[in-house]
Image (cartoon, rainbow, N blue to C red; front, top):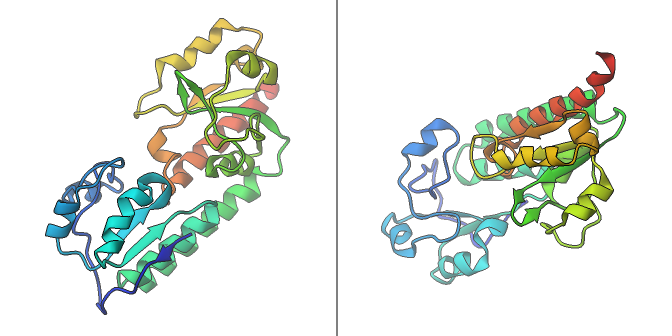
Length: 249
């Protein structure tokens, strides 16, 4: 869930001096000065802020962006939660490193409590087959090693491409038709439901189309390895529940 390259200097509390462009949750995060995006970070801008701790996301930033800061002697906390429980551990670690241990412990425990509540409410329900669509061209999904697949399982779902070899595989229409998921959930790039989600209606024999089970979750609520993933998890659980509820109508 994270590793720190070296200990920062002692400090009672730290404040955020800079963040990347997509750091927009909660609302107050939008006011923090920007140092780049998720693909590139300006080394010069970061250095100008004179940080005594740098927080990096391994699977997002990559070591090619992180290593220069390590080489310059900065303490770097490399965060890379791979499971939902790891997010709670990251919260606690970040709280200790920034001088907010009690607040971090409370947030960590709150995250785990909500996670447990979702598991209790949904994980034991009859399995629903799910296709999680990351993008449409190329047609992309996720395998069982991705944290979103854990969300699918949490909600009582089964990822139809769980056994794919790569983490974010490209798939074809034929394999999707053969898998015949009961629910299709799309993310996309923005806060609006992507138009391409409805292209599946061209195949009316698909269970997800036949039962009108085409759903959308904003990527900011599901594709970030952060506490906000619980917003997407709850939404997904409610969507899969709608598949069960259709039999009661």
